[in-house]
Length: 239
Image 1 (cartoon, rainbow, N blue to C red):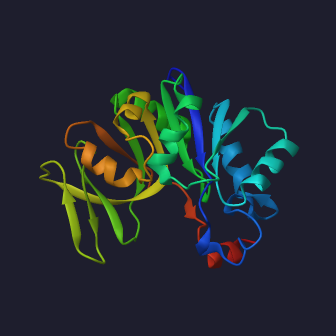
Image 2: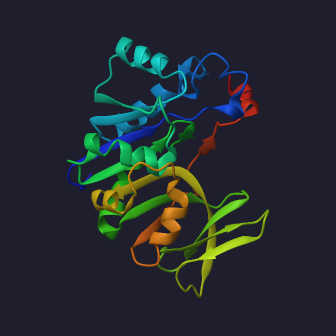
């Protein structure tokens, strides 16, 4: 991995409402798939990519995650970013954890409910080679919300919601391709300077806005296995 200093952050603070009743007494991160929690799977995925410092943000049943991490040994240093008082969404949560991540050149962001055999080292190398502000893992899949890229350069150009027909185009595009976001991204540390402090905000609209002036690219991993286990039915099928 030719990346300079890199750290990881696992977004584990969500309420897990789509996984109810599994999340009635536990956070989404501690839901088990074949007796292994989603959090442990995500941590081990980042460790396998060579990441030794990992931040986990917490909110819903946060004390359970703290207890779980205290009781388990991982080949990485795990830090908690505690959003117990206020859930800040992805951009807000990332900004809130800045003090734990600021000495890294790049940060790999990973949603806790994602299972994939994506090669994270290859993705990080691609991100660094492109010298992008952010690199988004994307796939050719059915969804209602798409990022729009230039097919040739794979630069982000906009966003489209098929259900509402809402569309935002932030830069001209002649050869568009629509791809679904995989919940995995790599960012350059300079991105912290663009996120407003203290706000609850998602990275998605910010990426689309930033794309007009910054290089944000897609990493197409359609060939990989991928699953978002954010829904109760998905987990039941896997248990």
